[in-house]
Length: 159
Length: 82
Image (cartoon, rainbow over all chains, first blue to last red; front, side, top):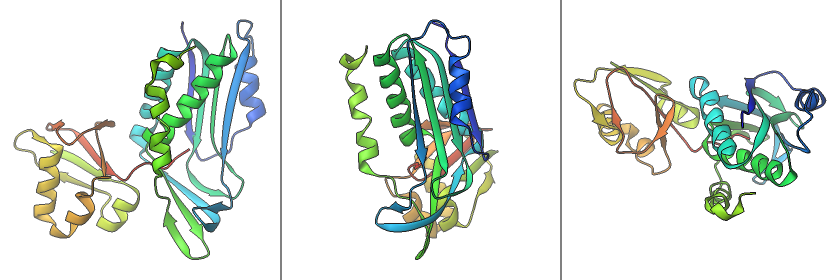
């Protein structure tokens, strides 16, 4: 199956309705679209957060995201995939990331969206620096994020 | 010549975002770290923590990966995007 893939890394915000419309436009074959958005929340790792700066490795970011999407396409029949990740200065409740997949059936769409997010959190070269009342601090990677990949090593979960 | 890049808190603690090094012969990522530490002993604690990741030519690699002349080598902490 040929998958239409759109990957963007940008400072600007994105419009979920517009992205969703693009996944639906002229799409007569799919019965399921699943999307996820990640937001900046006001409390993280026990401290009040007032802002967030997202650093990335520009030459590698899109390549890493494309690699993750390719893996997902190898596991599930996906017609369209969109991944948007913002960088630079963000504020509380801002959108950070958008992952959407379109497929014939919901199982593949749910799984692929979840898979892409789990791998993005562990393998895409982005780093968050939070502004808090106590000063700026780099967000520390969590063991639970790495552990989240374990469920995808089981080949039986394919749909 | 290879280009070596550092990101996020590693860039801050090393006070360096990039540097260029002559490479007379291919070496491993581990060898490169040892060479950087030999030049800058203060970097040892930051480069030798097990959590530091490495990408060569924008692809994640392990410590035994071979670096060749012209490669771009990046060191960075575990990623926290999403």
